[in-house]
Image (tube, rainbow, N blue to C red; front, side, top):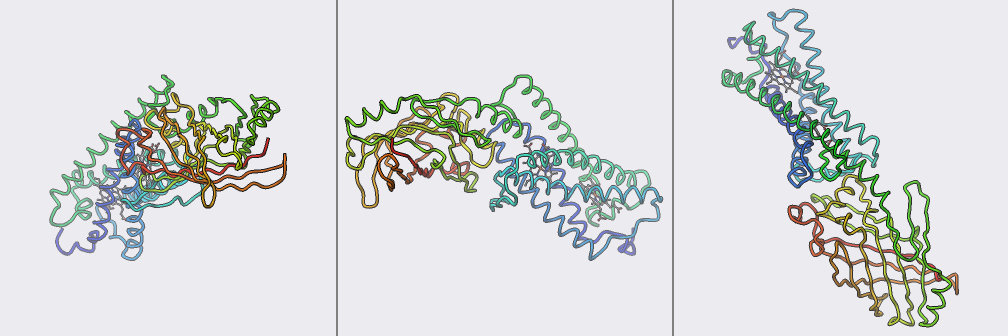
Length: 444
Ligand code: HEM
Ligand code: HEM
C-alpha cells in the first residue's frame, strides 16, 4: 500500500463516479419502495419528482463513467484474488452496470409511456415515446424486477469487498477509497449500505402489505400503486355513465357511439316554432370540450369525451335563446390514465358527488366577431357566472343547416374548490384553466 501501488488503485475520477453513483443508488432504492407505498398526496408526488431527478442524474453519470472507463481502463486485478474471485467480481460488476443502466432506462420509459410529468430538477423533460398503457406496465414491472436483481448484485458486491478487507486483509476495498479518507470511508460505506438495505427491506414490505390490504378492501381511493388506480379507475369511468335529460351521446373506447334520445324531437320542434328559436342537436363526434393547464410546471391538455345538452339559439332571437351543456366529469382524458383517476378524487372534481359539470346560459349579445354568452358554470356544487365569447358559422339550408360554434374562456380552479387543501399550490396544477369549446350542431 505504498505510493508504488498507484497503478493498482482506481483513479480519483473513477472513485468519484463510484461513490457518488453508489450513494445515489443506495438512496433511490429505499426511496422507490417508500414512495410507492404512500397514499396519493403532494408529498408522494414530490418524492416521485426527486426520484426521477436523481434517477436521471444517475443515467448521465453512468454514461460519463462508462466513457471514462473506456478511455482510462481499470487497475489490474490483485494477486491476492483467486481465479474464481476474479471471475465472480467480473460477473457482478457487469450485473451492476446492467442495473445502473437498466434502472434509469426502464424508469424513464415507464414515465414516458405513461405520459407522466418528468422533470430533471425542475427542467421539464417531455415524453420520448407516445402513450402506451401496455408498455407502461411492462416497464414498471421491469423497473421493479431490475431493482431486486440490483439489490442482489450489490449485496454480493459489498460482501466481496468487505470479505477482502476484513478476512483477506488486502487492498481491494482501499483501492476504491480516497487515500486520505480510508478508515472513515470503510466505516461510511458499511454504514450507508446497511442503512439502505434495512430501509429498502422495510419499505418494500410496507408497500407489499399495503397492496394486499387494498386488494382485500377493494378500495380504490387509497390505493398506493399508480397501476392500481389506473386499472380500477378506468373500469369505473366507463361503468358510471349517467344519462341526462335530452339527447345524450356516449362514446365508447372501442369507437362506437350510442345516442340516447329522451325527448320527442317533433314535439320539441313544435314548441320551438312557437317561440321561434331554432333548436340544434349537438354532433358530439364533431365537437370537443377541452382544457389546458400545467401540472408540476409541465403543460398538458385534456378533453371531456362525454357531454350533451340542449341548444336553442337563434341569431334573430337572442333573447329567446337558451343553452345548457352537461359534461360527464368521469369522461376526462388527459393523456395519463392515472391523472384521470386522481382527478376524480374528492379533492379534485369529486366525481362521486358531482358527476356532471353544467354550463347554462340565457343571456346572449352580439360582438364584433361573434357572440357573447353569459351564464353560469356549475362544477363540484359551485355555481359561478362565466362569460363565453364564441364565433358562429352556420352553413346549409333549412333542415340541413349545420352550426359551428367555437370559443374559450378561463376559470380559476380554486374558485370551484378543484384541487383543494394540499393541492392548492400553483406548482401542483396551474390555478388558471383555459377551457376551449368547439360545438358542431345540426338544426332540428
Ligand atoms: C438507478 C436509478 C433508479 C433506481 C435504483 C430506482 C429504484 C426504484 C425502486 C426500488 C422503485 C420501487 C419499486 C417499483 O415499484 O418499481 C422505483 C419506482 C419508480 N421509479 Fe425508479 N429508480 C431509478 C430510476 C428511475 C428513473 C430515472 C425514473 C423516471 C424518470 C424512475 C421512475 C420510477 C417510478 C415512476 C416509480 C414508481 C412506479 C410505481 O408507481 O409503481 N425511476 N424505482
Ligand atoms: C457500500 C457499498 C460498496 C462497496 C464497499 C463497494 C466497493 C467496491 C470496490 C472495492 C470496488 C473495486 C473492485 C475491484 O477492485 O475489483 C468496486 C467496484 C465497483 N462498484 Fe462498488 N461498492 C459498493 C457499492 C456499489 C454500488 C451501490 C454500486 C452500483 C450499483 C457499485 C458499483 C460498482 C461497479 C460498477 C464497480 C466496478 C468498477 C469498474 O471496475 O469499472 N458499488 N466497488
